Length: 396
Image (cartoon, rainbow, N blue to C red; front, side, top):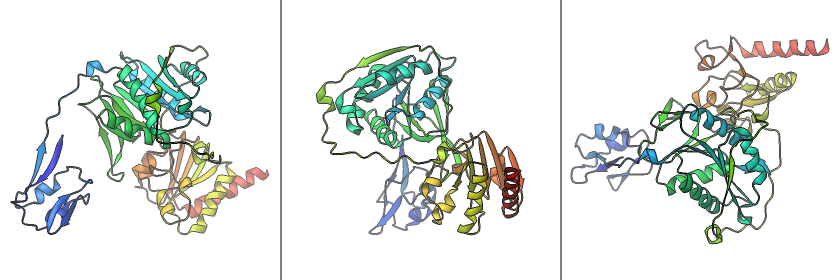
């Protein structure tokens, strides 16, 4: 593990390091540079400093005995009285990673009652399901949930822990990773498992300009979160296999200063994540009213409409309509993008769609690398013509 150190006796306060830092991680305070939490230890400041006042310090980290950590553990989230679909997708991915290895696939489920959920998980190829039941687990409290999953991890000692990148998972996973002093990679778009059990966690980084491959070679377990609709869910087997292992923590472990006063369910509404057909408008749209033809085409196809991030930033659409790392992940049977350039943070959240059609005037647009069918042309000519023909067929 490395860190940056600034030698005050050599520093002349020129401020070049702060100017050159690509992450704004150096603040000039009273004429002296000070590092803040944004530092990525990239080393740009070291090369920029003519006074040689900035050093990279390497801290020796003792590697864990990887043979003592085995298998993959999935946190099976219960939401709205049912297993969250992302949990099944994670089980499918865990099974795929474990194929041809000695790694078992296990799951942990929490709640006031869990038997039905645990039995259901056995239909998806889980080798063992650990359950924690208590009235205190009837609703999500990060501290109580973290205690239970921590206990399960210490019992099972899995090499990998997978958590859905839901609101609950995003609260739970960092707490667990901190308790084990290990790494966590959020919003992974791909996962690969090396022979030495290192998990390669792949996700867009640096504003979506690269696909980073992240590994946690020296600590265990390895934590990763994955968003809904990114992985494939396995087929449900009629014959369950595996076992259910009930676990219990003393009431004192589940005590919390957090007390539920009341709760109100979020109103259920249509989500672009559930649409089977999507028409997407991008930066190529010239004005907000042009979204009407995107909506019309979606209506003709019996689908829904969405946008890329630039249109949300312009205030043309709500964030719930956005596809991308800061929006939603989708996996429709058909998606038609209109004027979308195809940045990594967009394509990473829709490239598993069954059929991808892209319309763009730029033949070099990145979206064509993802599309199954590419149409180089003006969306203002192509989309109205599609709408006209679809309406004609509907009347025929």
